[in-house]
Image (cartoon, rainbow, N blue to C red; front, side, top):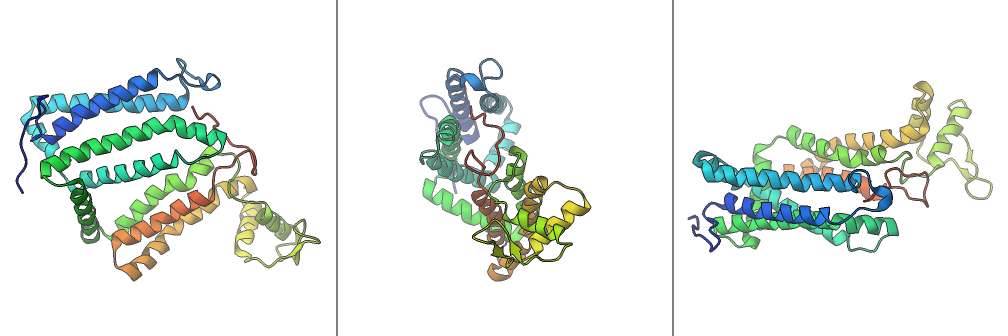
Amino acid sequence: MKTRISKCKSGIDLGNPIFGALVLESILAGSFFLLTVFQPSLTNSQLFFGFSKNRLYILGFYLLALILSIIGFVTIKSNENISKSMNRHFNSLWFSFAVVLMIIISFMFLIITFIPETNENQLLAERIRPFIIFLFVSGINFLGFQCVNKNQSPRNFISSTTINFIDYCDSHLTNFWMVLIAICLGIPLLFQGAYNYIFPSGFAGLYVLMSELIVNNNFQIPQYIPYYGPGGIPFAYPPIGPYLLAVVSTLFHISIINYLRFVPPFIMLLSIIPIYYIAFEITHSRFGSFFCSFKRSGIHVSVANPCNDNTFGTCLNHDVD
């Protein structure tokens, strides 16, 4: 496939796609940096120079993208060997798939920010929306130059890149590496609630009460659970979970709150391994099995929503801007 080589009126060499992409990326990063600088943070959230902690993180990201983009296209313009090396990586399958993935994920999150939520969540969505737009536009920027360089339409480029990446994973990566990647990606998703909040979210006090009854009953299963329904309810639940909580909290003197914060996501993290191998036995696809096991982490995040003023506990980090 021949590479399309031409120059636009601005002098950007389309035959050197990484140069043009980095020039536009520096313009995007600089523009979003200035827009963020001139948008003040909330008074009660200001930490440094009138900006909140989260706003400083975003400004730092824009500034880093700007500096790296400038260094990149200046180096490419002055060094032909580095230019060839960066173009080779720019057209690699991994980078192409990363661009496609960034576009899809940022587009999904961009839609989520327009879904009506509570006042606090709506404020957070409005504040991070420009950052998500920046990621989406950056992905479109790199996608456009790759399509021009490879003389493909965006639709054909996205479909061929996705198919080739799946085939590469199935043929070059072993089950061990796919499971390891799924676990590494699942750790921040599963433990973000334990890190951000004092109390566990998405869980009621029934199982805690069940474990306390087991401890008080000399580790024998009680007949009834009080306080639930008129006269209590029968102890008809699978006892492994409450027994595990009772044993761990008693032997190791771990508080029940910390147990509920860290142990459930740890068990869910371990569940990625059998889910992957079961899916592989059915599909014989390493990428499909990886997606199935990694989705387990996403289900936990969607079920165990961060607590708010109407649920059990008090949240930390209310600083949304």
